[in-house]
Amino acid sequence: MSKKPSDPSKWHPATLAIHGLGRLPKAHHAVSTPIMHTSNYYFDTADEVEDFMRAKGQGKVIREHEYARYGNPTQQETERKLAALEGAEKAVLYSSGMAAVLLTIMTFMKPGGHIIFTGDCYRQTRDFATNFLGKFGMDYSIADPTADAIEKAIKPSTNIIFTESPTNPYLRVLDIPAIVKVAKARRIMTIIDATLATPYNIKPIEMGVDVVLHSATKYMGGHNDLMAGVALGSAPLMTDLYKMQRMLGATPGPLTCFLLERGLKTFGMRMEHHNRAGLAIAQMLEAHPKIEKVWYPALESHPDHKIAMEQMKGFGSVISFLVKGGNAETRKFIDALDLFLITPSLGGSESLVTQMWAMSFFDYSEEYRRNIGMVDNLVRLALGLEDVDDLIADLKQALDQI
Ligand SMILES: Cc1ncc(COP(=O)(O)O)c(C=O)c1O
Image (tube, rainbow, N blue to C red; front, side, top):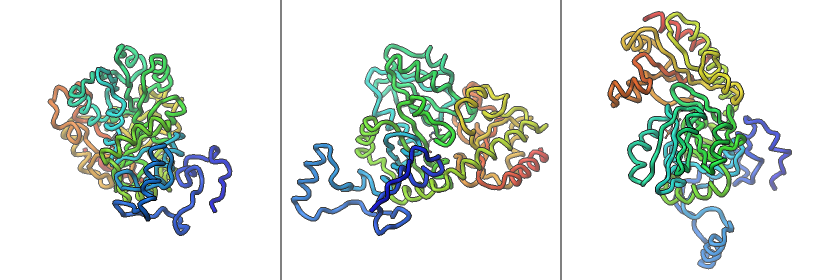
């Protein structure tokens, strides 16, 4: 028999990431959630099939699983924990962060509708807007990441405001309650990609956001070894999302779900480390004579410092900065780093570094790149879980070599 939990509503994120909203019975009393590698789940009798289908039609659950595209037990357990962590009624897991982003937009967009995206949002999300939305009869605008600019971009046909906070690479932090106020007054849905913040550092549902998205590939998985995405919100909204997800089969496999759930067990500790490391290294870089400018929301020099201090508990481990000099100096610095791997992504155990224009914006024209701030000397660090003193020493020795 499962015990009743004390009061999970009082638990902190580190506890919720391990226990969800309490203990559920598990096969063979296993402590970890077993990986159920099967594509289908059998019925014992023909009558059982009929009973199951009838109950399903009436919205009742008399047994959980039937076919793996519709979900698997490891996924269900992971979704339960993610929902508890986010303070959402329900979660829907996807095979990648982009599957979560695109299928959420596609589920809620309307023909003739208009979506506002904030600039500086993830490149693939922006590319979806510019290259594909028109084909579905949707219009879109890209607004600056401020509540004022978003309000000005609203049209009578606007039905979704899609934001990120913090954005990437400039880590702009949006005034979420102000955006929600503007949206609710006009019955516009708000969707936020909070990958860079995680539920450890920001709580968009408490601020009234309708749907929160994360690339779980990042901090939630936490080890640079899986791809997954998640959408979180009210039960009715998540039911709509689930219909599309199960149809398309953008379902994460059982092994991915196991790795993600396992990663969540150290989520609280990892986020504490990421927040501490991010702050220490941002401060070190800002004081360094070979650095021109640093973007990190905890720094007073950041344009959204005040909003960030009000809304966020910590600021994570992504730091963007300009190296003094141009392309050559920036590359010399990157190549001299010992502990940082040159690759995109963030939120894992290994520290990563990217020269933004070359890694993520290479195929754009130079003029366009400059317009969106992807200058030659812009570097983004995604700190891992190594000792902070070792990372500082590595960054300093690499800067010395310029
Ligand atoms: C903010 C943000 N959203 C979404 C994604 C897409 O996630 P995934 O790579 O898991 O598809 C990324 C990936 O870097 C991201 O940084």
